[in-house]
Length: 210
Image (cartoon, rainbow, N blue to C red; front, side):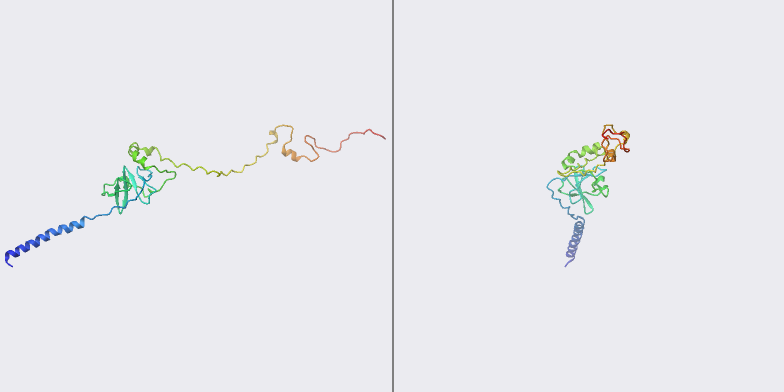
């Protein structure tokens, strides 16, 4: 091999080395991350307000899904994903672009307060902007649950009635009839209204034949 051939071969090898290195480095940087799987819901889920915020969550879904300012958010593999629909398509939100109201939720944000009621998704979708602008939930609490009515045939337990004591003697009405308590104190040979017998009466000599 002459000198010119050696120079050509060296130039070819050098060019191959220079162009192959960036390609390998680029393959290591651009890694595709699979998005979270869809929930496959057939209807929009009802929502509940997280107290102290204007963020809503779906309590009937087996998973964390949040509705805030017209978008759905869900955490997945140490990241937050956003979608226009409750069924996806879910797109990874870059760090620093996730709303502060979403990432600063309290740890027990899934806890349902007593009396809290679900809000239809359509109602939240139409009114969330006005509610947040007017600070609606600062002045109006979510509507409480209605108490269930007793079923037919189900009666409330009645407390036993206490018998009242007889009125005092000075407060009784003088009706001519003795009070039940006085009636029990009379002897059998005394009728109502008859004075008690203090002993034999001296009626004097009776007339008759001698």
